[in-house]
Image 1 (cartoon, one colour):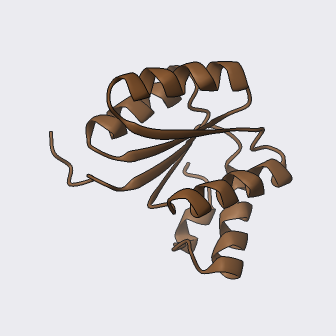
Image 2: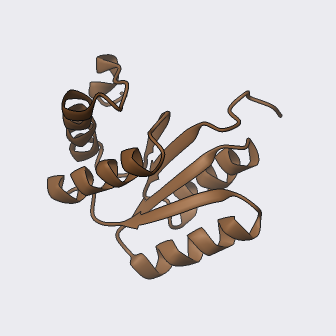
Length: 121
């Protein structure tokens, strides 16, 4: 299926295993550039290597996105490396949202749609 996402940058939190990793694989199959994030550096490294093995363009950043400082570092690393087109959160939405808002206000590098600031019911 071609969803016209080729070249888009996708940041996926909680993406070292399970649904998060499956989501990363699906976006990679659509030609997206992937930034993985999870707490476990070892599992994250394994997920990154597995995706690279498929030819995907992927990077990874370990940290706990429930911690605002870790979230800010993740957003900074992603924006510095490639920007953010799509955000998929599998964990700690509030901290990531705050970090995205801060990045948008301070760098102008992230487009932000404020309607995403509320969790889906």
